[in-house]
Image (tube, rainbow, N blue to C red; front, side, top):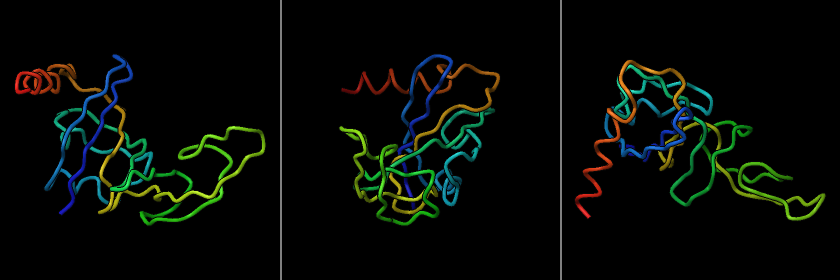
Length: 135
């Protein structure tokens, strides 16, 4: 059974909210690719729609939009996700995950695509305050 950490970015407020997702809610993400939209109720945002923008696997390898499937692959890149060149013309072979969410994915980055009636802070913000009290 898959379980993920979903980081939901709110572009209007410039904030990000982190949620642990497992069970049936996690299954909504399996097989989806970067750029696809998922019902926000999977992360506690009823009435919202979130768009998958990226993620990483158990070892921290990033997902790349230009690589098909969920498998590991080694690619030669000159920049972009997973590699930032330090000099002109520099290229490097890196290991990345494909754009599809799979069983090995541990973190999913998402952004709010369509807003619902309630405020994001009302739906997600209360849990952040409770977590701070527990520490």
